[in-house]
Length: 113
Image (cartoon, rainbow, N blue to C red):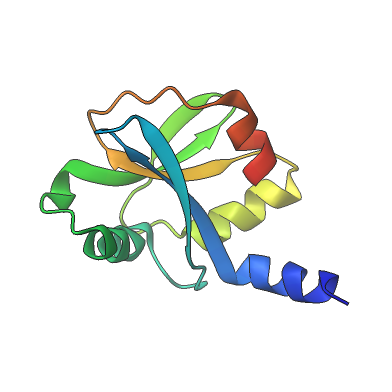
């Protein structure tokens, strides 16, 4: 009886990796997966929640097939996630500093999509 709840709740949230450059860790957080929420709005939510004082230096990135792509402010993570799921593509969203070079664990992308 838990499965339907998990299925519907997983679509209601977007999982985002947020690297901590100070201790070298990567933490995973869930944020509302509102269909109309843009990457720009989600970035503002994340920056506010984590007290990021220079949000213009950060962005929401999409990790697919070992490549990082910074989403444009008007792109919709929920729509992108839906398209990638339909294509059976493992993916991960990450909020990080533009200049940060993160060594993403390989298992992370496949296990969290």
